[in-house]
Image (tube, rainbow, N blue to C red; front, side, top):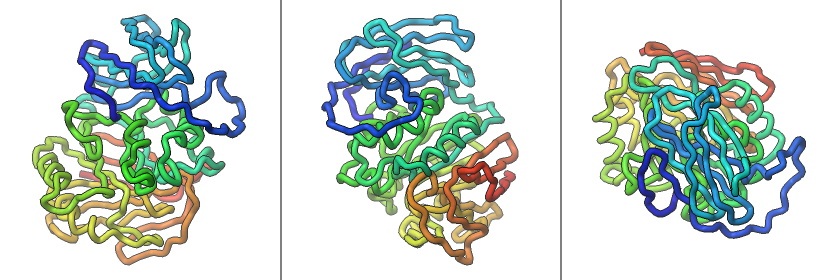
Amino acid sequence: MRHPVLAAALIALAALPAMAQHQYKWPAVKNEPARKPFYLPYVQAGTPTSMTVIWRGPKPATPSIVLKTADNQPLQTVNGPAGTEHLFRLTNLTPGTSYRYAAMEDGKVIGEGEFKTNLGPNGKQFRFAVMGDSGSGNANQLSVAKRLEKWGPDFVLHMGDVIYEKGDFEGYGPRYMEPYHTLVANTVVYPTPGNHDYGRGNADGYFRFFEMPRAKPTDTEQWYTFTYGQAQFFSLDTNTKFDKGSPQYQWLERELKASKSPWKFAFTHYPPYTSGEHGSSLYVRRAWGPLFERHNVQVVFTGHDHHYERSLPREDFVKDGSPTTYIVSGGAGAWMRGVKKEPFSAFTQAAYHFIGITMNDRELNAEAIDRGGVVIDKFKVIR
């Protein structure tokens, strides 16, 4: 999230600069909460020992947050300076532990949630979801969102194109917080930017809304990594330079070499392998394919093409018996596109969907689930 560097504390707090008051006509919402979804709290940048809670208000107010145990016992209350955008960084938390929080303005509760910190390096069992190309604001997005929320992931990976058509910040009300406000109050979404998020050239809306996990405040948010149990995840940006010698390539190579996690997953927007209308991004394949295979990245998740696809396990660059499987998950709300089946593909289907993945220390089990709850594909990876 683009904001001034914040001072660290047990619970580090900041109020962000006042945001512009956009004139946006909100669509009618059934069972709409008393407060517009755009102004409800959401969690971000989860790690084993920290969590960030963010929200905005329609007018300046003095924010505070109450952190509680899972059984609702208060741990600490922190007040912050007045403003319209509020960010609380909660630190010194216990890995794999549930906490409750209450977000307040001028002494009144405006939203609540319950989150679980990331599992530490010995954590073996967890579940996460994958979705992409969601930001249409239509009934298709809402139906997938309800199905995903019911499935109950520990966290979510988003493949980009969060907001159509141009990634505008005001679109995060009807096209993100409205369908996902219950989910994101309790569950971290880790995104990677799509081309539509860069629709205005610099993805300001995307970087203003999301807070990425960073080792230090000066780290970029365009690409990043985080761990959850025995898995490490790498978010990559295909909208900026990624060829060999670029800062992003050098970072990825360095992080993959240093990784101690037995499970490794990458996620990005443009797909190196796709049977869809856009066609495979050969530039991405040639740049990162050798790194993924050399460093035993088991699965690469992507979006951009609006369908579901699973590749055959690939060893196109390094034949060492540790192949990489490529997934296209671009069906969380945007219009469907036609899809065929290339020789590298194991399964394709044009369907609104998300992917639910259950992990342990030896096995990954995944199901692609459509908006009606039907499992359209299953696959397993054993390491």
